Length: 68
Image (cartoon, rainbow, N blue to C red; front, side, top):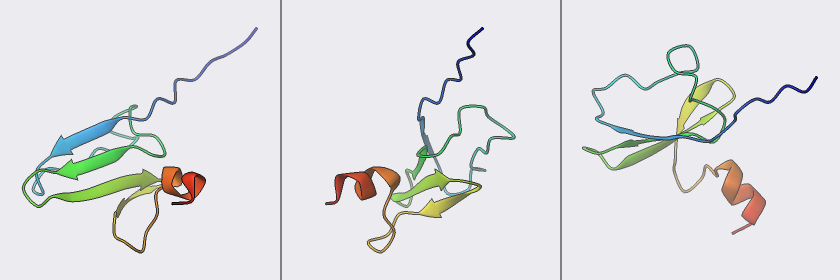
């Protein structure tokens, strides 16, 4: 028997005052998921166990693989 796990990366949009989803609150949060704060234009990405703000010093998994 083969088991399949859907690891589709999801993108979320909300406000800075919104609580960001976690794997505990949403099964759609997986490594590489993003959360865009529409009121601040900040972008966060989920890795391992928390949200990290995207800055010029922090690379997403995709950017590391692409070697921009």
